[in-house]
Image (cartoon, rainbow, N blue to C red):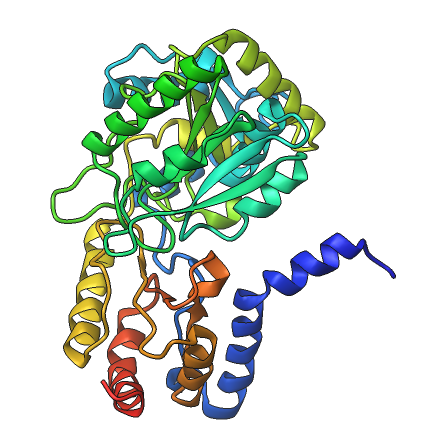
Length: 395
């Protein structure tokens, strides 16, 4: 075999988005792009804020000497300091540049953290529904994923289920807020209870358990809601994030990890993370993007555009009889499949030129994901097709 058997298995089990993309290409070739409604990819369709272009032009016009050379593996001091300043404001703690490593996106940051903390065979709890790549990132570093369902009615934390899953092998818990694929935000009260639970289990087992908060959607929150910082509630916590969504820069792969300054042995953790950032092959985050985002830590895309799209789809689909939790943030809807087999439902939707991802791809059979980071006109054009699909399944 040309590739490892494990990788072949992983490919077969994680190919839904790729399959839907290929199906979309086929349908567009047959029916025209305006007649295909592709809700598969979480790929922002809006442009970065104007300040990004201003900073880009400024750097291009007057590049500092050595702008493209290697730097410290942790990243430029001024960029890390800019990140730390905003984290200090949101957490109320004194976060410094020494607590930050600039990374190649949130996925790079997550791999660095897992490489830093995992021994072979140790477990990482992931909360279902979950981002599909978590399992593979954990496997990359010899860990074992342990799936734990959130509350199936609200998708909020099920603390009892998490407690039941914690064992002497548990090394970390990954949370994702706002969540992909559900869009829910975990409130401060839940984070406090999670922190109390983790601290109690650490004492019982005499073992450090890290909570990794995956936050690329943290600035995309609606209806006056805010995403609370995890740092005041959990000492052994690490934030991993990127500017793919808040600055609409997914192709630039720029993000960071930040350790709670109150973490046990935080200096040793940071030393390990910087080492792993280098030896995993990332070496350092892109130099140009580090310089750009240093000036943009308080900038964001227009959240109002995403809220309008959320409301348009949520109201349209619930009016047709689809059942779902209204998302607090991010840019996804995660409705229940109106038929038991979510894969069969997604295939049925293709008959109406609607492209979706089954919940099975997120560890949650019986649901399906809609990514509404798409053109508003496409959403409007799709509504009659949604109506036809709803009628076909008896809604």
